[in-house]
Image 1 (cartoon, each protein chain N blue to C red):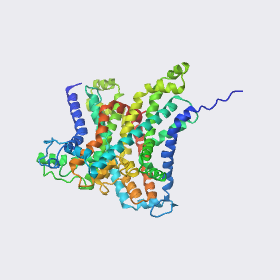
Image 2: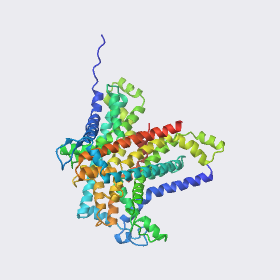
Image 3: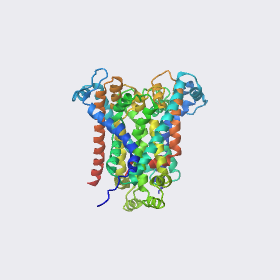
Image 4: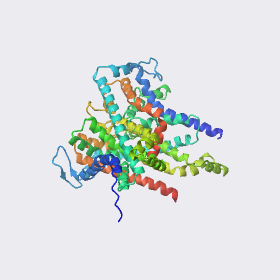
Length: 278
Length: 292
């Protein structure tokens, strides 16, 4: 590789890093400043008097704002964890059957599951609201988790199907000869082999659930179940909330997904590619 | 006589939960959207009754919907063009392996992993007239007073900046999809191109682009779906203001503020149909064009 190209690549890498980091850095910087420092001109590009006061205000304060941030933080964690667990368990069972068993109606069912991926998610926003409202599930954890699971199952089933399908057929044959039941083969042999796929599916489902906004805006707009995304969006329009406090809330809302993305990027990249190509 | 094999219940048991979810919470609601588009379903004007194309005609006469449709068209053009060009650039940068590439990829996917609403708030910090990074840079570099109102100043600028925030979110996936396609290109093709005297631009145009078309097609389709359905970024950055409102925002306002669900159904159906048609068109176009 010649010098020219190496130089061009270095520039490219620097631009990628700047592009991805700067908006996060600027909010993180504001979150550890006082409001007057954040508004100072000329601007402080690095926080000169860093303080954690905004975070302690949100995490230990008694005001309405702090209480609602804490409550919706618990809500979003509960909803994302529940949606992830249910999605991964159900998708694993179905993917195993679709990939490794022959049965009547298999192809039709599988295509029906995949076909729903082609539709934009918001196609079903209004009917889902009306169904949930008929069953009294608006503003309940059950309602929002059911909607998340129905939305993420097709991708999960597809990704896991591809993992199971890539394992050699001789695995089950060996297991059956040893006298193990099919469920035992799934549990003891196939699941451990499909572990990377299961981890990818779980991480991607969790991140998707964490990012939801319009569905919970409609289905859980009450503080009892409102996720952090909805709470924070409501703060944005109210000019009474100081920028630095809003930035701190934003940093709290991205901390968990950011750590997941940075720490497990290999699983996420593999899962995304397994789900989008082929 | 052959013994009939007993139906094996196990696969059906395994598939049943997913099937129930998909039928109950995806297919049935989708049918609802299609059917109810032709009904008047209005909380303020009961009962629900068949009304033919009334909802669609009402949408056509609703100037907010028309403005939002134009805005959305602009979101799609800007978003698809920017995310694809940036995605190709990022993928080409990362095409050959180097030490630390996985770290760069981890940083690259970061914006994809974060909620769009919160990204809207992060970028308010960039665009803000007082505390925003852009205005501060302008002031620091003595290029101006550094108090420019960026969002809401005019429609074109507002839409472009809002879409930039969405591009920030969707470009990582485009880059990954294109990068995956680039990894499959054999290195010998580049060597052959070099021997034939092709410079970097030439080998990019005649080797990289044509062979990455499958990845580019998937990237464009995901960008089309995301931009046609954009909601979070305009909602957070611009509220209900018509300067940047999208059709999905109108669906939300019509259904959940005016409680006119029939029209909401009709608008969602239109968005879905347009999304499907454009996605299919993109795939066919990109494949045809290269095969000819």
